[in-house]
Structure formats: structure tokens, C-alpha cells
Length: 318
Image (cartoon, rainbow, N blue to C red; front, side, top):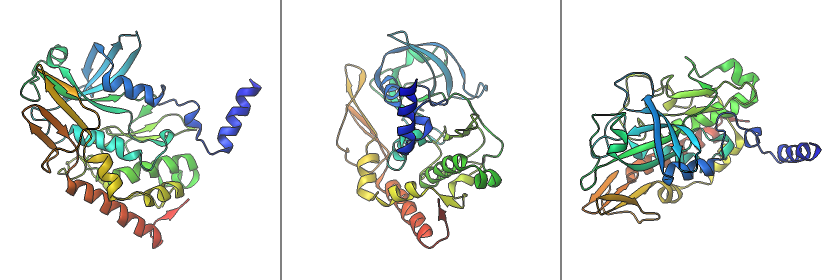
């Protein structure tokens, strides 16, 4: 026990957030969750509409992997063609990846997220009207996202009094706001923004990021598209300074690629960007998702303007 306490004391002294030691919202290592979501075979043991409405295309799903491990995840099938308003898989993964440039894992504001092609037959018992996403395979492009624990969707996420008095809340809510601003989040209703119910580690999350970047806005609120907090964590600001357009392009121009072989889309790691500047890039035997050059330029523009506001003293740091 003394050894554990010594290790915890060393980590805290080194500035490692408590969430790294025992996270109550994401209860497994992120690397393990990413590996399972990206490629581990699983079966769906149960699934219901994520928000309780039959019109909701997202499914709150309990899945079991081949090693017996179980997870609750969100499965959100894409529309045919892989793109439609409020259902943009490439935006969901881009938001998850972007945060990694300026936030430590314990401060991530988007839960572990992956894109995957699943057999349509696997999903039909839970979504009988589903159609295949692309020609050549009876498969559906889906967003898979870890289902957070111990969180709620408060009517008002922003609390100025708590921001001033609770440093942990201030850090988490400010980091959330940085991401929602950079991605131009356009659907910041209570169901899409979550706050941990654990008082001493009030992590804040954006769990639905499909209306973002250059998407049209929704009619359900876009307050978090702009910077609402008066101050930002100094560490976050310094990491934003280290980012440039090239770093954003390397990360976001290609977020996923699949090769069509024998009526099945197989993921391709490290694929170069396909010709054209569309978000969904198609050819006969290959499909690729990523942000367009303009979308990446706009992320970088918002980053640079945000830093200018900090340098002018319009937004403080702590």
C-alpha cells in the first residue's frame, strides 16, 4: 500500500492528472479500447436506440468480443455514400484525432472512437431498414464509440461560478471549449455534451461531433462553437502554439482507407491521400475518408485567431 501511495505521489508531483490513475468515466486503457473498436471481432448481444427514439439511427449496444470481454458502445451507421447532414463519420473521427494534438489522454473530451465496416446482416436485427454504404460489399460504414460511464447531460453545461471556484471543472470545461471551437461544433445540445457526475474529477465530453467543421449548423444550439470560457489552461495554449497546418494535414487529410477485396472492405493503414479534395473519396476498389483542404485550413485559421486573442489579453490563461 505504501508503494502504491509513493507512486501516486510521484505521479501527482509530476503533474499527471488523477484521471490517469483511476478514471471513472473511461474505465479501460484507451489503447485497449481503440484496438477493440478498430478491429477486434465482436457480436451484438443487445441494442436499443441511443436516445430512446425509434427515429434515432445510433444504437446503444452491448457487445461481446471473442475473448469474452464485454463493452457498451454506440454504433452509428452511416448513410449510403458515407455522408449526410448530422451523420458524418469522417467528422466524428477527425474530432477524436484532433484533440490528441493538444490534450493529454486524461483530459480527452471525445471518448474513444473508431470507424469500421460491418456486415449489414450483423446490424439488420437492430436496424432493419439499413442499406449498404457503398457498392461492391453488403457492408455498412459505422462509427463506434465507447459509452461513457458516470456522466450526465446537464441542461446548462456552463457554470460561471463553478468555473471561478473549481479548478478541475475549469480545466475540463475549457479544454472542451477549445475543441468545440476548433471543430466549429454546430449541435451543442444537452444530449451531445456530457459532464462527469464524479465531483472531484468533473470531466466534460462531446459525444456527438457529426455537425462540425464545414457542416451546416443545426437548430438545436451552437453556443459552444465560440469560446465561452474567460480563461484557458496555459498548457493547452502552449500546445496549440506548436501546431501548424502541416501537422493538421498529416493527421486529418486521411482518417481512414479501405480496399475492396472479394466483396469485403479491408482497412488499409498509412494509405496516401487519394486524388481529389472531397471528404469521401471513391474509386472502383478503394474508399477513403478525410477532411478537405479547406476544412483543415479553417481549423488552422481558428487556431491562429484563438492564439491572437490570448496574446491580446482578450482570453486569459491559468
